[in-house]
Length: 399
Image (cartoon, rainbow, N blue to C red):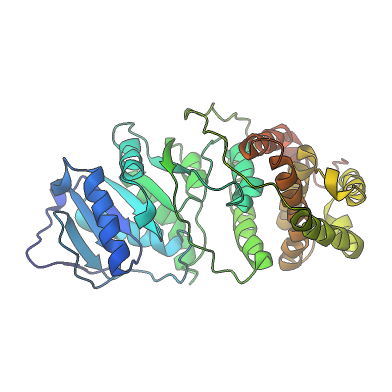
């Protein structure tokens, strides 16, 4: 159990704590900026907010109540929230009897006060259990999310948050408890850095979810050494979560329309011919060398689509959205069936992802990138019956 030490002359009154704000480890300058943003976001309720950071540090001059604490579980990941973070959040919430919580990840000092207030209002004023931020990121940022995480989560769990693995969250007390229960399965197995999927956990529990505008934010870089490792970590965790929740997502459900106003098109630089060609060449090389593996995972119709893609000129290279959706679903099915070693399976997905990125960047030079991402998500929704059929009858179903 974590031990919490209140700073001198700062007495926490658990019953008065309406909002607990958990910060990741920050240096002195970043911590000062984060606390200033929090104070600006909640000028009328500073006495009912408690800020916690996992460092034995003295806070700068602030009217906020501030504590440092010893984490109950340690994590080596700094780029996203992990099982250890959710376990620590639950411990803090229990100790201080807070009514709700903001979990803010690394580089939280870059979150504007308006974003902090929106996350808090999402769980208080809107009475929701999970407030997920919608970041305004550069067009080339977060492409693993855009290609796989967002469309898969939207199609399978009927939820609309654009960033289902967001690094910042607003949570009700019962949502924190739910996520800590999921996290404990990993920490008990000595996997504190395992990914927990807040959106799907909250959706399966039948709790309420809202999405709020968070504006721009500096995102920390993943600690994976390369794209292969990052894709294996994230896609593997997503596939395992989808497998565990199959009874839920196989029931028909439609994601409600997005409540947030459409964002203006993100400024983007056209993909250079060399940039796109490098990714296309990687895909073409893999098409030659990975036929044996891909043929174990993908049905003939998808292999034919990839064959056509491999001979397209780089200037008109375009992966159909329905083909990409079926590819992701087929890799998900192969992950479940252990068709091949899971590490090899996820490695074989990387050049296909690069083909999607090349196609997306080329299309984004002609239109709003977000419009294409929404089209991809719609394709995942349309192809969901394909996944359900293959999931239920993997041997009998012939694409």
